[in-house]
Length: 141
Image (cartoon, rainbow, N blue to C red; front, side):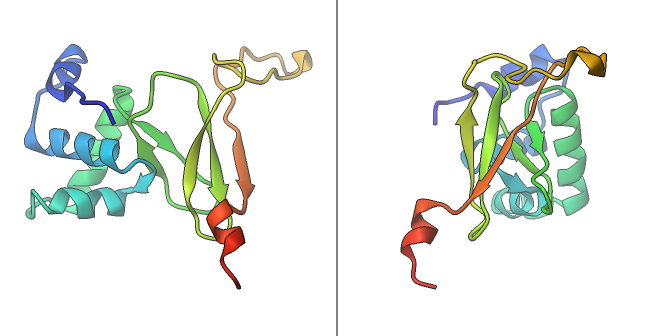
């Protein structure tokens, strides 16, 4: 993954640069699609005093400033990623739970069009593909 200039990105969005924010951004960037507890485990390796509640607060603040994206998989805890600059979707393995990014066919939001009768201006269409990944298909049951 490419290097990110997190301090500049925080400042551009009017946020103070803190160790907690930098650690959360780096954890989410290096291990995308982790729930808050996974982010906490990664951050606690370098900041052992950080609490789960602090992680939730930082995740909320970074999501509000669009430095990270929250993804809510069906039936699972919210996950986070730093891929915010494009319109993409997700594929979830129903066997192992692995989540993969899926590029939008059209490249820009929204990828799908809602019926005109809906009467809404659609900004984003989220698609979740569910199936069994190649690794799980090769593993005997």
